[in-house]
Image 1 (cartoon, rainbow, N blue to C red):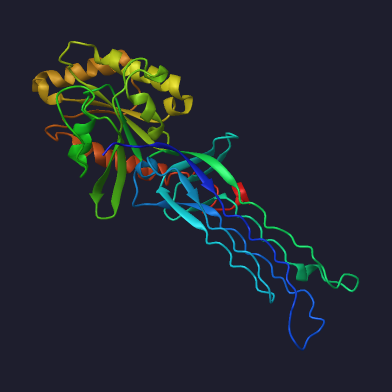
Image 2: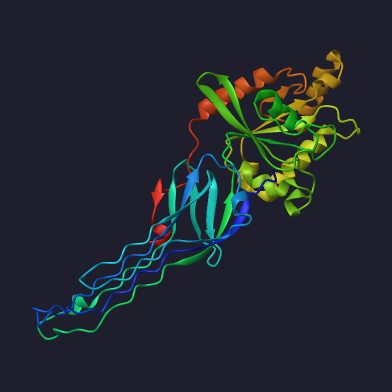
Amino acid sequence: MKFFDEATITVEAGNGGNGCVSFRREKYIPKGGPDGGDGGDGGSVWLVADPGLNTLVDFRYTRRFKAERGTDGMGRNRTGKSGDDLEIPVPVGTVVQDVDTGEQLGDLVAAGQRLKVAQGGFHGIGNTRYKSSTNQAPRQFKPGTPGETRQLQLELKLLADVGLLGLPNAGKSTLIHAVSAARPKVADYPFTTLYPNLGVVRIEAHQSFVIADIPGLIEGAAEGAGLGVRFLKHLSRTRLLLHLVDLSPPDGSDPVTAVESIAAELARFSSDLAARERWLVLNKADLLAVEDREAHAADIVARLGWQGPVFTISAAQRDGTDGLVKQVMARLDALGPAESTDTAAESNNPAS
């Protein structure tokens, strides 16, 4: 299934029902008076974070959503029925923006979180409300107000603790396959990953973290080259980055240049992402002789001037992966819970 991480939809809240003009017409009550009831309120539109969804593919063909209208008031002081609210399920991690104003309305980061994106219209008033000692047969009424209509830009940013980045064919998909139950496409050619993959890494019964694999980056990605720039935003919520690099590329390229080019693309895309804690993971160690691995890794680290943690692994052989994920889990525990970018579990503010 193709991965959809952006969608534009139109939401329409229901109009309020109109008030009614009516008078009592009963045989033995000659002076019946007004008895027109109020209309009902229009239904509002809510977005609800659903943990069972992981893409915005449901909005590929259905792009317009409308809540129920309030019914009109009736005689005998009968009030119209209010329209039902419309709840639209979206994946956890969806950012909601108003297309017309550019305002960010909310960020749904918790399962079950609700965000009102269009306020239903207010009910109209029947002529009973206008009765007074000086106006005993009012014919005034108030129509219901229209519900809000908004065009929304939905953008999915995956919720993961750890993000993988590196050049195409660096072994990111192989690593997520080795340490989790995720089964991304793995092949010996670049750009096998065309959309992000999430995997849950379980260390012990009650210890786990989520890891995200995005398409490989190439030089110029921040300006639109390749596939990765579209998905770099999915690393924005991560707390730790693992930078994978081929220890000995078959094309003879320099791993140091590979690391520096990706770091430059991160800086061009987002200064915050470039400043995120990043560990160096030298992959495909099994392609070198055992006696050459340590010296080759030390040379790369020295030329980079790398100050952070460094791991030498073979994701394909699962050599060194257990130690890596245990160190990652320990670091995540030390960092503490991820800070939420959301303001409230349920928000009425955007359309109230």
